[in-house]
Length: 400
Image (cartoon, rainbow, N blue to C red):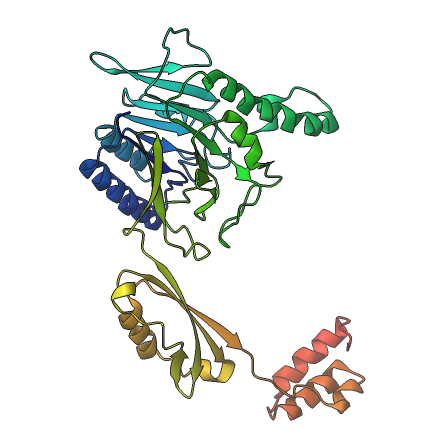
């Protein structure tokens, strides 16, 4: 068997946010460079191409996606894309990408695609719908989008829907397994969803009532590799089943190294390799204190070569009294040390004050309370304040 190489990627989350666009493009540039230097038969995208519903305009994420799909399509044989959940990949948004280049195949429903090299070009067959007489394919790619009850069930009863959903969903993978069983070629399945046992980055929030799918359900398809999307933290349940993770750090809850996966088949063997996205800037959190007029933090965290391209968040705990000692010059020093785009946050600890006295508790009028409070904090009051307090009393304001 000739060598075959695939890229497993997911969760691009293309958005209008300029900062996120810059991160996404940096990672996609590295993917383009990889495909320029290495033969890749197909890129398999496991959903969430977009961050949210957005119009096709210059400052949205749509032109970014189109630009890089056009670039990548010129470097690989095929690109296969399945749909993520509706809150990211709006219904209709993925099917619009279908064949923006002749070798880009994007679907919002389950498909099983068999690739077969012809005399002039490679042909793609939908094994669930197309008639053919092919006895063996070069490889098979199955795509299953994010599961929604609306797409599988027609019962009006919520109880009936919940009871029947998992059974019907499992039948999809069973059917894929039956359709592909006669073929011995490499088989890869892309699925967008939440697999039981997955772990989240602290910065990722899932959609409400996210549907949980067991690994054993996916394995009913009897494929060689399961390319998962939806969870941003890269993780693998088995050597042949896992999430590639998102390809850039979306927020400060996703500081882990980003990457994409390659899957190679040769002589009946499968090898998976993780390709770190060096273009994805590492995100480094620094917790500090302001003590005796200077910032103090863990000395092991530096701006050395390892963090030369890092994005820093500097969170400093400081007392209320000392906050005024942090001058503009000190802020500029932080920006010089950590970079101009450092995110600086202060956790201000209020100073304890003696703001009441026993006499205040016994005051009969609002004016008496104000006078007693003024004496406690050693602040004089004038006739204007007394007049305003008397006006409040006339309006019915009571001493609490």
